[in-house]
Length: 321
Image (cartoon, rainbow, N blue to C red; front, side, top):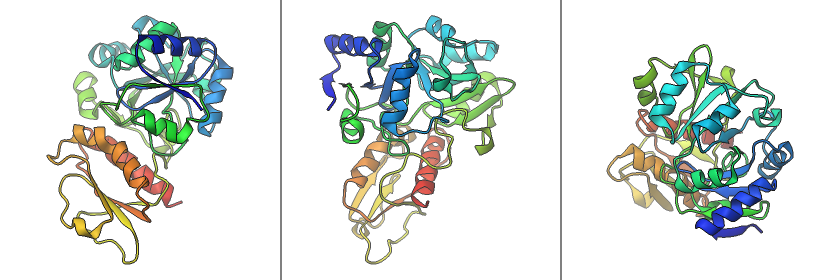
């Protein structure tokens, strides 16, 4: 079982030494908990895929602590990339750019590009800076299952498979980073913690990616982010089928709470940022409630609502397989 340490200075130093030694460390970011390995060590990166049971064709994101470290990982050929870095880094924005040879092909699934971001969480930044290496880090969960937003979520899914978990409390944003490819044209490969509208305010029109664009970044497969029990997206006020233990993931208001075994509300005042923060934690609680089925109400598909709906649709697609 992994060591679980409160993320103080001593623990971060220990975790950094583990990364340099080729071990796996789960750590908090502002989005979700990441499962980190030295991005320059292909053997360590291979363990990420083994632990997560992740297909090798699904590329990883490389996390950096400084712009200088990012420039060692990828090429900033498009001037729009630096505009976005200036505005949104550190933060939940991953840029897909041409990779440098130092990054092994296992990180990028053989692609000539790499996703890079600078996390805003102080523990993540201190850890990467202390290690002095870029860190490949997908979400610290089993592939296709609910993303972890607390250390407890990490322990539950992969705690017996990795070396150390830094506990930095609950992740403040709660959905994964936005992934933007900047090659010939800007393409949104995955909605996430930075709304599309904010990005377009800096660089202009961005094309919304589709399945034919992937997988060039994490989260592009048609199914993902799923609880272990079936999930269905339903209109507000939909009654559950008789004879089933059904839970409800509601956006703001619950009209008939008596219909459901368990109810989770994303934001009682309709705040999409709060809804995103609570999203995976609510689904983890519903997953543990002994249900037969989860009903999920749609949220407005603007701002962070776009990221929430992306994950709900992929969760529904996975449980419909």
